Amino acid sequence: MNKMEKALHELSEMDDLAAQDSPIHALHPLAKLLATVAYIVTVVSFDKYDLSGLIIFLLFPILLFQLSGIPVRTCFYKLRIVLPLVMAVGLFNPFFDRAPLLTIGNVAVSGGVVSMFTLMLKGILCLMAAFLLMATTGIDKLCAALRMLHLPSMLVTLLLLTYRYVGVMTEELAVMTDAYHLRAPGQKGIHISAWGSFLGQLLLRSMDRAEELYSSMQLRGYHGHFHYVAIAKARLRDVLYVVGCTAVFILLRMVPVAQLLGNQVVR
Image 1: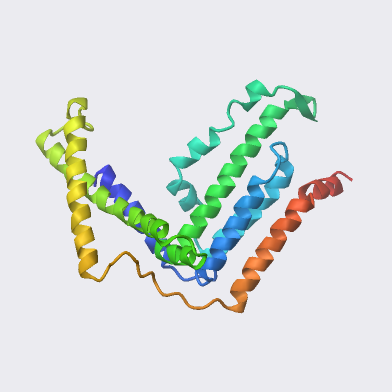
Image 2: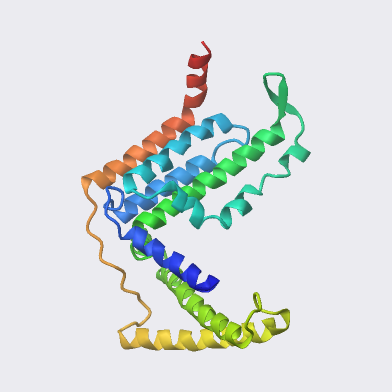
């Protein structure tokens, strides 16, 4: 199994995660989408030095991981490529903001260090929330929820087809990679001299597959409007989930819970 086949297998695993049965999976897709958006907006709204207030928001994704039955390590493994890029955003803050902000024992911690960890934690929390939304909802139900919010049909269809076409392109890459290695046994990767022709063939094969997919969609009745998966009506627990999560997020944003607990421990 080459790298492309492994990537295709990981992509199919996301659909398998979304097909599981749990209290979180059973929630209405729109309720999960709204709660996730409220969570991300609240997390992003924190000040760059408010690390203590942000830590309490770790409880939300941890609780959802437990209720959905999805291991936390699965999240970090799937996001192993994106996480380093997100965490690298604040790496240079300690060099630009050197003013001491707090003291831990006899060690003075600068504002740049605090803001660096705050930005990293923000990125991790947002990625975890987005992963949980995808892993417990699926792209079809998520797109149907977006249409319920009256997002333009063209944008939602483009999102859905792009997600699905990633798998098609990965299949083409897997076939082309196997064919290349059969003609160049023992060679690691693709030689730089073949990059141009390889990308050109990939473009041509992708265009052919796109034409075939579009023709098959037209034969199945596609005329510019995509028929999304049917979703049951929202129930009381879905409304309570959205309202409850939003209320808790606002409360945790307004009240410094971590600071209050720290003061109690110090006393």
